[in-house]
Amino acid sequence: MRVLSDFLFLGIFFVLLAVWFFAWAAMHVASGGIHLLLVLAVVALIAHFMRGRAAV
Image (cartoon, rainbow, N blue to C red):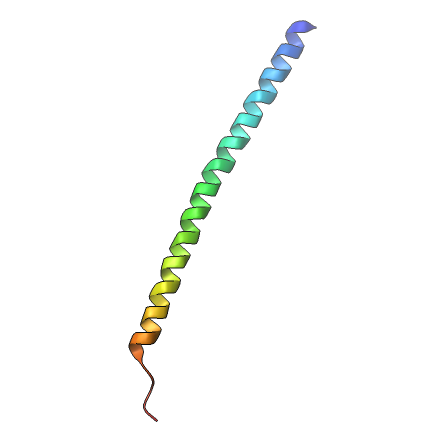
């Protein structure tokens, strides 16, 4: 029985480690996407001001 419980906790350790790794990687990708959206918003703002007001 002792060997089974040792492998059980070892298995739980690896599962939690894998979940942590995938969450860590997803957050890095998500934060990169957020920064990309911020850059696109700034570019759109600059383009808005560069176009100027239309003549009436």
